[in-house]
Length: 307
Ligand SMILES: Cc1cc2nc3c(=O)[nH]c(=O)nc-3n(C[C@H](O)[C@H](O)[C@H](O)COP(=O)(O)OP(=O)(O)OC[C@H]3O[C@@H](n4cnc5c(N)ncnc54)[C@H](O)[C@@H]3O)c2cc1C
Image (cartoon, rainbow, N blue to C red; front, side):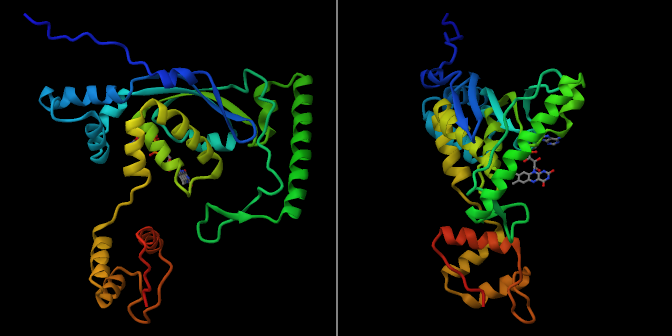
């Protein structure tokens, strides 16, 4: 009788093995480095085939299967892959990072150890201005001459806070209290373990243009340097369907259809019905959903004049 259990080998990935332990620099003194990993593109396929049965084995190519799973949000096979990273991140960025609850974390303790003697510094031409529309975003930069003053003040402030912190430690103040006035720019370190499904969710949110610049830089390294080597087929599908793709609501599809039929009257009528245009004076109100739709149209090379 044929043994129903095939021999299997533990997954290893030569490209990924080459970068284990290698720090990828982020910002002025941050890094991301791979500590360990479990699984690969083939582990995703293997898990999916358990649920679909061997019937699909002959007909479905691995690549096609992964792309299908990702397109249709069959997410559990992606949870079969896990990754463990060592990261060094400014505390304000870490505060955003740690909101991603579906990960396992061990963070450097400034109760137990002296705080990491490093902080995020800002170059004189890198002070970002408050965005006008997106209340939690930034756009453009402060004039370099003014930025120069802010950078000088930042250096002095960091220096002073370091002196204050060290003085407290020298006088025997407990580390847990001495740290309380350290700036949010101080770097922290952590081990961060997450499965591929939740990592893709993290990357989706943190690679988005509205995510803060600093966390975006970390997401770029994790995506382009680590996930792209680890699960290249999944990464390609993720870039294709999630990162690069857009979705349209039922109403947006209705408007799109009328745009392509060149039926401007109907487009305006729908826009009025959903409140994008004031029905009385035909004024275009400030509406985030409408602005997002216009962005999507721009990608299609379609310009729309609502009036
Ligand atoms: C651009 C941007 C701006 C943001 N601004 C703010 C802000 O102003 N204030 C603020 O507080 N946060 C803010 N956040 C954080 C945001 O609200 C989320 O907390 C964060 O992005 C983590 O997302 P998540 O909960 O989907 O991820 P995870 O915590 O990693 O969870 C992954 C998924 O698991 C499921 N899940 C996890 N825990 C639970 C649970 N307890 N119950 C049910 N399902 C669960 C959900 O499906 C979730 O999507 C912002 C995030 C971004 C990207």
